[in-house]
Length: 301
Ligand code: HEC
Image (cartoon, rainbow, N blue to C red; front, side, top):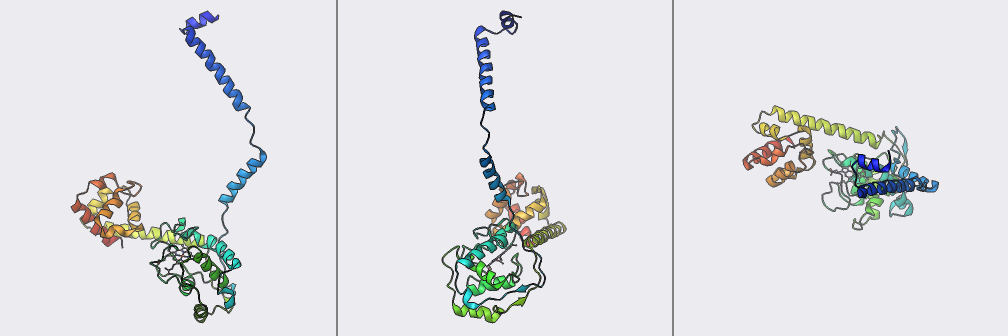
């Protein structure tokens, strides 16, 4: 087959034929360029690898420790922050507290996302249960906050507890000043200068797991309470949910919907499906909405 026959066979005009040839030449040039691309230098590859491993390295978790001695501390050593305390506090905060309270203390750690109440945002001044004074924060770490995900950390060395608190205080500059009387009061209450035999600690990962399990159990309990209620609003709930457990979870995270019908409507109609509700939730009459709201308010406390 000569060129003329080929052109005839595919019914190409001479111009189309020219374009075809130009296209083929262009592909060959591109392929050549790609083939000749320089390899990534080894040092650059190592750098990339370093960044990747750095980011995925897990900070060592606490170990189960039974009956270890918890060293006491000299009062003079913890009256004020210094470089050593702050460095110790930073390392300890990042490995022990940041999973719930967030790297920078905004209460936004992944481990705390599902908790209710939410982990404290250390940048906020209001709403603290024990308080922001050195004594109160120390008490929180010694005793935990009952009824929340905040466990006691009394098994950590006293110096480390002060170190963590000083590190948290460095997030903002408006914490109440620490006085010697206050530290003495801490000593009167918790006998911090004496070495003590510690109780058992559990690793944070185990604690988080426990919380998640408890959380799931709570959702199951609420769901079975809802289903057994026999309330008329139950029909509405079943009609507008795509995943009842997810819906309960959505309503458990933030309860601002309980006293405001507009908030309630907003929470069940935004992120439809992801939030466990169907698009039909937006078609409820205001009468149905408020009936459902007051029903769920009694179920999700
Ligand atoms: C498993 C999640 C979790 C971890 C880990 C955790 N916290 Fe908390 N923390 C919470 C929650 C939840 C609250 C809110 C408690 C409340 O308001 O009832 C809280 C509250 C607090 C408060 C405020 C108490 C108050 O007066 O209201 C302090 C201080 C605190 N945590 C310090 C720490 C420190 C320091 C660490 C690390 C040694 C830590 N937390 C680790 C969940 C956690």
